[in-house]
Length: 148
Image (cartoon, rainbow, N blue to C red):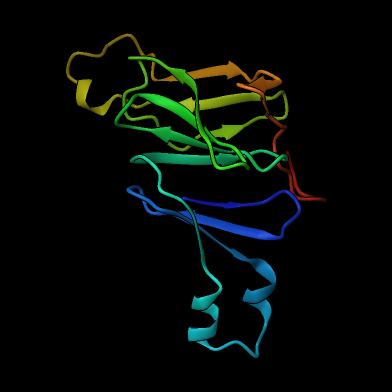
């Protein structure tokens, strides 16, 4: 799982079992830093639940597809992890993303139900609210000059 903040300042990453870490992108381009100095600049942002994917919005909220709890959690900049949606249909939520229309797209392959699952429903899309428990939620992050 890897995300780049909207301003390009931070590179975030996590293994599926966490934790979420980050480093300033400027450090990655600093040729004066050896491996040890670069490693010293890595920050642990948060311990996170087991995840299948991540997304980030332009306000720095990081969306986590929590596979164990069948939910989409949001790590807000103040460090809280909030629940955006929890639904039994979110079986193995995967590589999530935010569209230009502020809809969070959540593929949910439901692989453990494959022999029984014949309806063809394997995902969820939901409109993002403006706020979640008082925390503002943002828009999709796009690279300037890139495609949407």
